[in-house]
Image 1: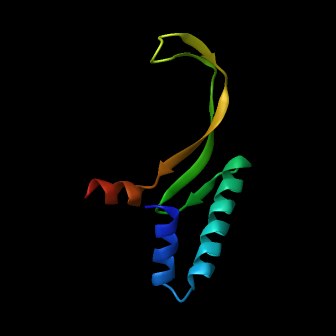
Image 2 (image 1 turned 180 degrees about the vertical axis):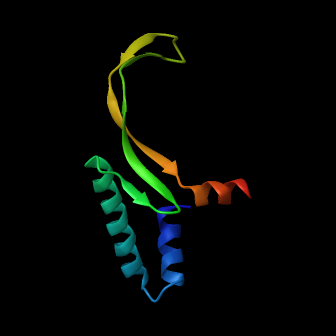
Length: 92
């Protein structure tokens, strides 16, 4: 599902116009982004949690050239699905 599909579904299942649905989706995504970037994380009960996870520096290998390079430490976004979402996916 793309962002436009999400906007279309929100518009069709509510009394919102497409412009209002687009604004709503953008506000929600911006809030999610800010929550993850700040390190607080975002938890949606029954769906899952979005967090910032630290990755240590490591030795990486370029698959084309087999050249070894040092990959620095960094933070990456991480999603941990909730129980309800895991069960819904498992029952498909």
